[in-house]
Length: 432
Image (cartoon, rainbow, N blue to C red; front, side):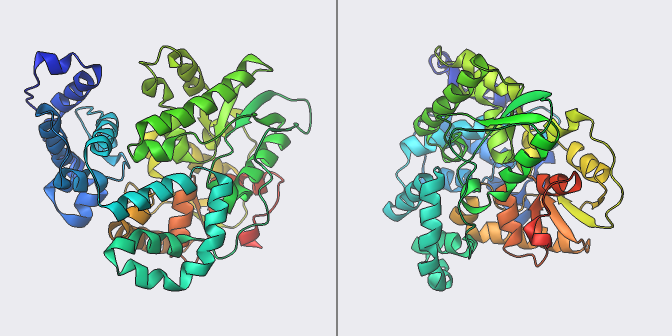
């Protein structure tokens, strides 16, 4: 795509990066076939190439974002299916990230929308705050349907609908704590505690820790670790996202330079995509560029790490698993084969739904801020998964598990919970 940036504009490294990305787009249209919003809405401006045009025009003219640009940028799920499809290698992820920051800094949203986004960013980036919010959600749940019909309150109504009706008792896998391998340790890893996950589904990290310990891996949750910054990053809150990421980077670097780490294990693939991108996020930060690069180099999705351990093959369990590949895993991290192969090795029959490349509509805060589109994508995804007639649905990201679980009448579990059960750990409560 032809661009018309001035030399003065290109002196800014971020603008130069954006220009290089935009120029790679040849408007071939392959991305439109795999973009969830284009497939759902049929609007060219809700396709990747349409958004690239809007971003190009906004940045070239060095102007604040307007309502139209903000609308179509906000509608992007950042599923990155377009990057998997693109034959030209357009780095759409870093372009849409930059566009979100520009929108957030230059566009003034309506007051109630600003309040909604601020509330989500505040409550969803701390396990304790989020648990408090989910406890209070029980009071508002009866009004969720009414709130969803009022445009100004729609995001809060969507959040109430997604809130679990029963919170698990406590979430012990947070804070500074270590879990020793059952036998002679073969390696030592850190595990990301997370923000939302330990509040509403601590069984995921419990299963990961139990499995890793049984496989003779020492596990530690480093002191000082906090939010990875992913959620705020995708909302365009650049400064807040980077501040959170720096704190967590420091915690992991302390462990790496102390007793040492062989890997940083992540059980939420949405967080994993961001952590693996720390090297890029902090490349211009002299104090954190090298630290961030070291952290990114050690980051591993839990299934990616398990694949390196050469697990023994287990007998058949006579159970069919419908595997939902989260966007952040298949498109963001390009991890596609390992989870399915590991599940089969663990004794499960694995099936994949049609349109497996399409997002389920979760995407961080998307299913609350863009609930109409998210609900359509959820219905489409659940229909395709249920068509497989599985005993259980497995996914590698809590957002997907919550989104799909809110509509499916089939147990939805994290892949690591099934792996832990297959290799001698606890049977998931949903299967009892």
